[in-house]
Length: 270
Image (tube, rainbow, N blue to C red; front, side, top):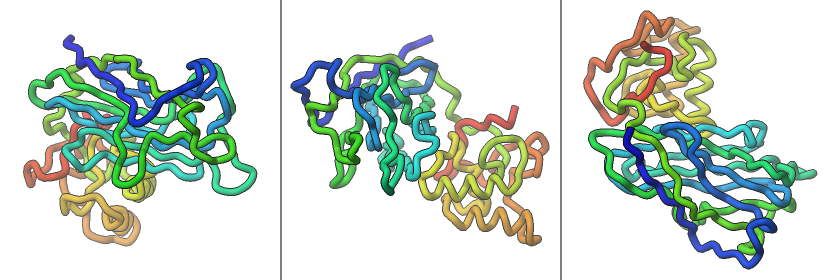
């Protein structure tokens, strides 16, 4: 299996303390096609805003999955960069009110997010790094125990090279069941909730945004959640094909052909 060699790069971060004294933000690959955004906290961490971007052709960021460390965070948002799916960012705040909740200092790293990659065509060697600033706000930020950004002396960004094995899952069109947004094999109210959560950045699309596009207008928005729930409970128009209440009965390709939304991975279809 070929390897995609990836490199982490810091963005405007330096350190005057030793690595053992400062918290550490870094990425690591432990499974094929995944890159984990990790924080090794030497002091309590109340929030994180960071991302990963890569260069090179044929490598696509398909989804951003919430890590175990931020499952109970009061605010989480993740977004895939619009410029050709070349990366994405995640922001998490554990709590807004006093007392501020934090991840305790720990010798073991916290997984903040998992970035899932696929390949298209013949992927080339590229680089992967902690992402550059997005808009006017830097994304390489870790909040300390008082809810303030850590200083460069308190936070280092690791530059160690990592590898992600490719080829990852085929990123051509794969069979899917429109409406089964959470890919659990059945279309029900939880899928409407998944669509709305995805629209507001609280969860990813699991590599198949086409499955979330209930009304088949080639975009995922709140209207898709409303359309699905209207169909399920109020006798509204049916979800557009391919669709069935059970994914095993409805797996197929988009009869309208490839559009802006695609399906790279769908776990509930063979």
